[in-house]
Length: 287
Ligand SMILES: [Zn+2]
Ligand SMILES: [Zn+2]
Image 1 (cartoon, helix red, strand yellow):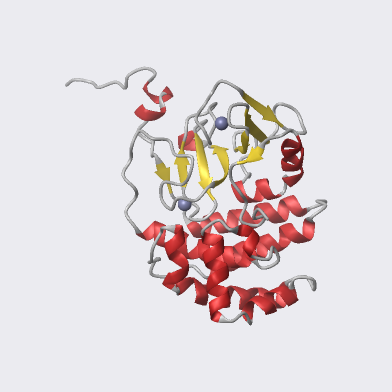
Image 2 (spheres, rainbow, N blue to C red):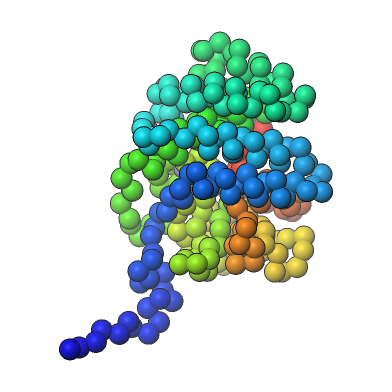
């Protein structure tokens, strides 16, 4: 009887690990509930506590609206608004939030609820096409939450995209920019994945290279705390872009959307240094 020992060092290579997947799709119910819990924890003592708690309520509402038999519909971001299903998700999202939002938010929710269908479709289309300045910031995150829920549930019901050697700057499932990149733990200890701002998929990219242009020659890591901070901005001197890297090795409770949203002052500092963010947060869409 012969033995087949694993090759020493095989697990050190991302490509050779039996756990390696080019794209992973976190279970949505678990993801939304982790996100909500993390947002509530980060809200404690935070300057923008009310907004972090509002984002937590949106994540909880998304979890409660997950389609029971799985999702359906297109995953190409620009095709989603025409498909229609997100509109009823938005109505139910607004209904669930209506009784439990700050007084400053309630009128915007009501205005979004009462928006004529063609104006609502136009706003959704603008967001899906990345024309964020065409939609008032007070209603955009709620629209985005319904588009995202539609796209994320459809992505989990569809076959995974074929794997390839390319490491994409934008999501290989839906084509949207990332929120941030994550350094994972557990079976994927130390591996880096980017988290999609729309379909909540995560895709692999080796560490220590620019997630935007792929160059590795002029990277810097910026944070307010020590070099061991959980959230750092990975900036690139070649394309002058940056995206945050959030380390679950340093804090296992960290979550892409929540930890990014709670550290927007880091964005202000990095932008002041002349770098441009190459992704965005669903709750802080670029204006
Ligand atoms: Zn995506
Ligand atoms: Zn770059």
